[in-house]
Length: 133
Image 1 (tube, one colour):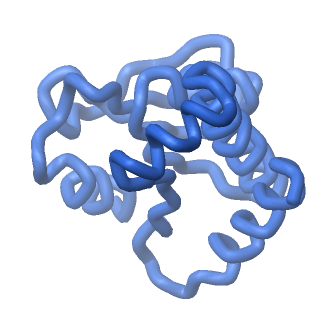
Image 2 (cartoon, helix red, strand yellow):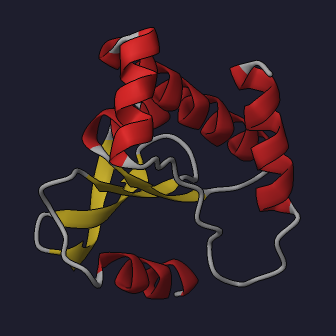
């Protein structure tokens, strides 16, 4: 399955959710599985595949009218904002120290961009509450 096809499948799943909360889409693997993937494809290529998937997923969701995103991971945040064509932000309310909601300067898109070193265990629940307001 290609990354584009998988991103399309994930987008259909996200759009089909009826919860008021933002659906959570994440990539994870056990330590052993990740080591095997990195051994087979190389660490950089494996990381780029995950980032590309989330980039394509965000672009597809935006094309379907989604305007709010919660993104974890510094590199993933970068590729998602690029795929959405965002050039700059207005800083919004703080979710956790160092992690505010941001609003795109030129389009109706809001994001929470959390790199690995910021936010605490309650980050996602707080971001969801802010998402609803």
